[in-house]
Image 1 (cartoon, rainbow, N blue to C red):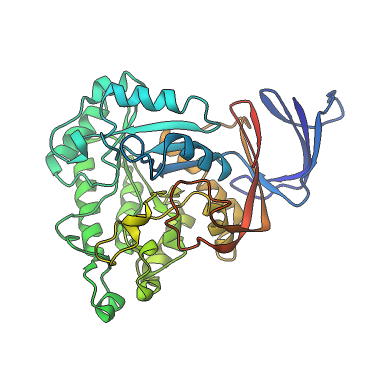
Image 2: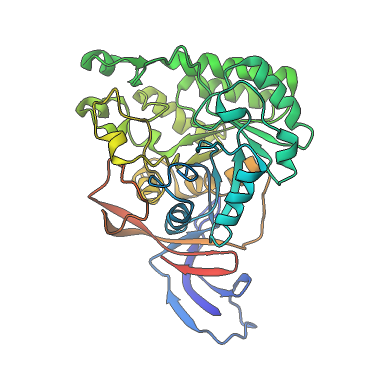
Length: 413
């Protein structure tokens, strides 16, 4: 199947390139030139579209196994491709947790027909409880190189150190959502003026800042590769910036919605805005943007966490944390383009996460093509997920993925 993509503007980490014609033919994407000799089955006018290498998400979640009603492997695969992602790291927080060869093989078989490539993150400790170790070396024999406890921080310093040491045997990487659980205990939102005003128990910046500092000291001692997930505070950015300058093998990402919302948006007690880490203050948001620009923050993630209606439609302090993040990813990116350039944003969902995973490639072997101006309604009809826990549900959004090329497949969204 040969497809001609006419007048397509390709974004790379430095610039938006001028319009060119590209050809997708079976297993390759090439520029059209005078020597090209193809019989096209389809020609697509892409003059109003933008494109980049296929997008990579370092943090998303499925309910399967155990809570398939929230998100099955099948529905997650559909959500990923319709959202423009050609690769995704799947968190281990299922029931049972992803911690044995059985779960690894199950996920591989279930995702075998996905358009997107699946990177499985296996639990570093049994049942992601932060206590006993999983069989890390055996799991690596199944191809797993990303380990972590997903939604739960590895707060025990001895466990963290030993995991980092184990992973060095095969150049594995530890993903950790870092905070001190006891400092965040019973917290529902960011600790600040807004939490005081509405009488809600807050989660202080201190919970994240202290834990980041501690884990960096352990990394300095033990060596290894440590990736901080969903950092949210000014202090965290400053600590990681110093560590990178020192030469520690540390990387970091942020949830996209941390750049869209802040704690004052919680005044209406919308449980769809209850996330972990919580939306912080404006000063923290500014620090996150600066961290993106100077390279302290390597990637932006969806932090896609489906929750069923019963988990969200209850009192705010009883509702579960989590928000859908995949289908609304591009519209959220569009909202940021007045402050952050397209090339920088795209680098944080392409080359940035590829570098975190150690899977950099200069080859144009996948592509995400999108219309940044197209408007659409995110509702029951358009939603690909089995859950609907999003503050943007039943609203009009701007920015629509049009085509995805990966695994030798050309998919119209």
